[in-house]
Length: 151
Image (cartoon, rainbow, N blue to C red; front, side):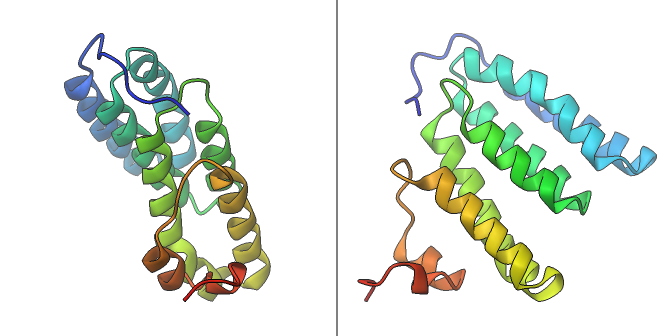
């Protein structure tokens, strides 16, 4: 994971416009998955330009669109793919992990333990050795059992 360097270009306005347009397209065409995929190209541009705030906005929008599509395997695919991108910002990965952890209780309730465990495993793979997750977040997501020395 990369730390943000000197921002080469500010994509904040383009990111906000693209995100708004993607949501409008998703609502109009009922194709959240397609709208998420369209934001991937701009995410790459913002990441390559060292624009961490815009990149973070875009990855969160991509995950939200993926989640709205109700294709939960696609959500995990987006999480995994975006977190492994060359030069991905730590702040972006942390924001994605936080966002997915917020959805864990609903996933467990609506989709069952099998899907929930797949999500936990994906989070573990994404964060392993990279992102520190707060004790509060672990407890609130019901993941305390994964860490035996947790207070």
